[in-house]
Amino acid sequence: MTIKGKAYIAGIYEHPTRHAPDKSTAQLHAEVAKGAIEDAGLSKDDVDGYFCAGDAPGGAWPMVDYLGLNTKKLRHVDSTETGGCSYIIHLGHAAEAIAAGKCSIALITLAGKPRTGAMPPRAAGAEADFEMAYGATTHNAYGMCAMRHMHDYGTTSEQLAWIKVAASHHAQYNPHAMLKDVVTVEDVLNSPMISDPLHRMDCCVVSDGGGALIVTTPEIARSLKKPLVKLIGHGEAMKGPRGGKDIDLTYSAGIWSGPRAFEEAGITPKDIKYASIYDSFTITVLMQLEDLGFCKKGEGGKFVADGNLISGVGKLPFNTDGGGLCSNHPVNRGGMTKIIEAVRQLRGEAHPKVQVKNCDLAIAHGTGGLLGVRHAASTAILERV
Amino acid sequence: MSEAKKYPAPVTNPETAAFWNAAKQGKFMIKRCTACGEAHYFPRAICPFCYSDKTVWEESSGEATIYTYSLMRKSPAGPYAIGYVTLKEGPSLQTNFVDCDLEKLKIGQKVKVVFKPTDGAPLPFFTPV
Image (cartoon, rainbow over all chains, first blue to last red):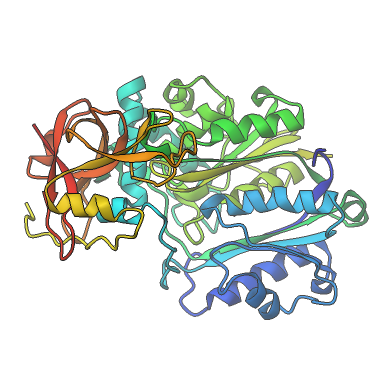
């Protein structure tokens, strides 16, 4: 069994807002749902599958009701929660459900307001008493990975800075990006140290907003007007400290999710024309590029240096919307926007200044949770038909 | 240095109560599986490696080396250093480094366990030897 070619992304919508003091979280979910359904050329009453994660107020059943989805028709729900990569996992699960005939038009939504509202609390894990007091946050959990990567492989802050520089080159063309100024390696190194060895400009933005997808069958996708984008490979994986045995913070669960997706797609990293890589921090990108096989472990620093991730300049154009480092990071979760920009590239709808020529194969990859503590990863490989 | 930093009291549960009772005696405990011989941390009733329930408490030397760390400079409660240490007995664990110059921490540095009080059982931290 494979999901290769069994599901197409027929609708995408990214909320233009980055600051939404006058909207509710549920409202943002409704706005992105409406946007994606309209982008696909469908009606909300066509939706028969709904996917959401921990950012959806109350979970799946309150959201299905709030969104006014057609409950006589809705026959498949999935509220898998794996942090920022939840939506990439949802994409794979939607394809599985579609392949199994459990639904035919799946809606996936993400939205929230970390900038202007409180974030929903997360339930405590079994490790709580043994870790909570130590104050692991996104900054220092990724800082610990960067520190060890530098120690083991000689990765430098200058090399990490190139990732932010590349993102800023792309963000200058995105009218919705929070940070539109092109920055230099020096700018990054001169920004304040937040959690060693990560500077402020190694960190992504905090933004309100959201996004949504419509995933459907090949037949329905062909009946709609949008360029055809199909899912040809998908992988998911998780990693944690495993009782403290053989700790290694220099790789992520992407080392497993990536090969699973590439194997299913029947392609290799060399075939990829555009990469959406979750960029919560610069180190996140560097480690993911290695884990996905775009370069050898430890050589990520060399790979990203000198503008190699800049569209039209380097070998692997990445995050051409400016990504989390410059454009947005709705609900502190980057997976959704990674898929959306990959679909734009495959449709030829990216900004002309960053559009990759003949973009027929793209990857959208993300992690969720804390890279240096416990996390999930998911990889999707998409093809323009 | 914010020596008066207030740490949350462990909630504890039947699976981990023995750890916290030992902590009150200044002992730092790990779990070892008598079926596969592997030690692990944080302590579980079922061995995470072989799924045997023949796990037993063992007092750790409390001696460890720093695997990695990050000095969190932007925190409302003041800077703190989080990291992972690898115990002499094998398992690695998350902790904070205390009672030292946080700017001088290094990967590979030798550290030892030190307990800090809470309103309940004390919590383990690590400090350079």
